[in-house]
Image (tube, rainbow, N blue to C red; front, side, top):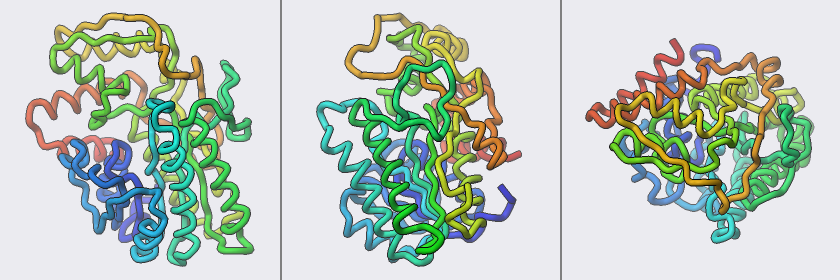
Length: 353
């Protein structure tokens, strides 16, 4: 990014109270942006957002499925940039809340893009989807942006739908000969960092156990998963947003899909990742209790990020081992009583320095 690009720009972040949304809001605050937020009612009380307290010019709490509320907020805020994170974000409970997942992830994108169509101030839109958008072919090779999207469980299917909806709006409404709004999608792998307190995810669960002297119980010991630093991924989003905005042209190659995946060292077995994190805490213990049976999940899903590297000049700054150490350090500093916002801003400043 260029140093002052975000200074004074109005940026709307949906899902700004979530794990990635809180980090992104802090990064934008640090870069001088004027941040607006739309997120699920009650999520403002989630620990990381409440503790980190990023500066939000104006926030709106409601369902992303509420078309009128989304429309009214977006058109009144008049953002220049829109970054959409607000989605159901895990594979969990796909069978129990299937309709909610599709309402949030599919209808939510439609609602947002309908609001953008009526907001002339918007100059760039980024829709964050997932590496789970791809059709699973259990390949050892990295998935590229032109590979087939697919349907598997409700979550991954909804993410593939987000990609198709974005392409529909890009071609039907946002193209250069129409509204000319550059719009891209970002597909990233699992991210790691301090502030993630969702204990249904592996690393937050392990951090909670190891930092509190509890024995962790893990499954799928030999399964390979892709992990990367949350700051690396969010920096990729911000670089892409700047390129979209400055292009002023919805026909440019920036207005497309981009993978943001880890380097080779980020494709790690669950057991190896657990052992590496355990070394950061004294007297940490874990046991292996078999394989995960309740959730359908790919054995290997590797993103090829060559396009982001070539077109955007993006690449991850931190290795997987450095990322593990950072997450552990965040947890230790928080547990010692240090203000969470100070911890987070230290990491952000360290990243850009």
